[in-house]
Image 1 (tube, rainbow, N blue to C red):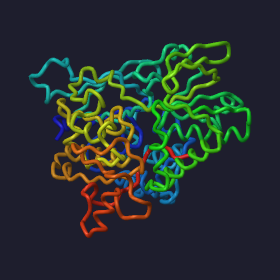
Image 2: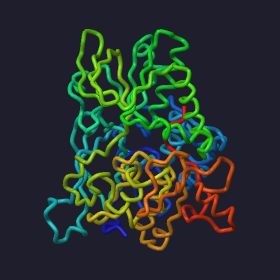
Image 3: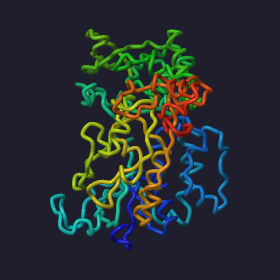
Image 4: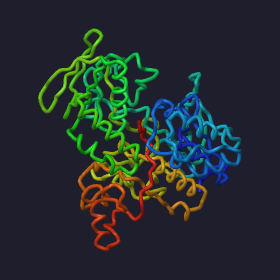
Length: 470
């Protein structure tokens, strides 16, 4: 239970997870205070609002939020439709944010700059767990403010901190200076940003589904503007693993995405460069000269634009005065990190986790949502919803409910690492054939022999991927 019941529970970020936390707090009779950096809720989703997600509406909605909406006559969308990021905001988050139970607790245009304890620095211990949190933020007029909270949930996400071009985690030489011709994430190449890409030579760097989205959008643009040239660079030569899920993927839209990319490569419409490591970028008039190692050999490419789709990392600057226990590599809570570390974990299935795995040395402070995954790329909306349900139950004093965590996630059909005897990998022997009731080949073989399974997964996966589809 929070130490200061008279103070609100502060939530940093008004995306799907932050608003779900607010709805859970309202359900429990606790007062939320949501601080959103953007001008309105769901600002990160609006940034890729043109992109369709993999999961149908039935897996995008959160239970406590839906209960509140239905109380006010909200009409739920078709549960089998695949929404875009923009539709999630317009048809779900925005209606939720204006409900009388939620709207008084949201402050938009507030950039949180620091979180700490009132009158205490990080070194001070006596009385720390009973001292309120102090949150500093800057409003839209650049005025600095301070507010107190009894507990804090950091649901600010990672969208504002994309990974740089360099394979060493650092910006490539010249990357900062060329920022005007480099886009990060999912630019709207078929819509508002078309003029920057039509008829241009575009280098896309990344090996995830976001990169595939951008490549396929550029291929569509190429049909309209044949002069468009698409180069797709992968840091490692893992194209077979990336696209190999295909029809084995338990989210059909995600499997179709991989197959479409495979067809584009086979047709020669995309120039695939792998392995590829950018060394430096130089501006040459209206173009960019890219110095890189391609298959271990130095080479140069002249392009007009670069799209970097290499993932994101958490912004930890505002947490300098909070006592944290984060994994040094993944930058996720230490107990959660082994469950999601892509160096150890395969196929995206994550064991159920909640308040126990998210707890920090700072009592009452929790990192939730995609930021809780640190640099790991496999966050799912369902994961965040269950995280905040568990955390809010703990803050409300319902410790039993907080620890009854249930979470079943989808398999991608593509393993991220070979199964390790030290982890509960869920892709033993690779993915099971499509249409079978098994989580992997070993699971299928075990069931065919009359055994209950291989133990990788106790129940059928539950699709709720937040990454965009196409």
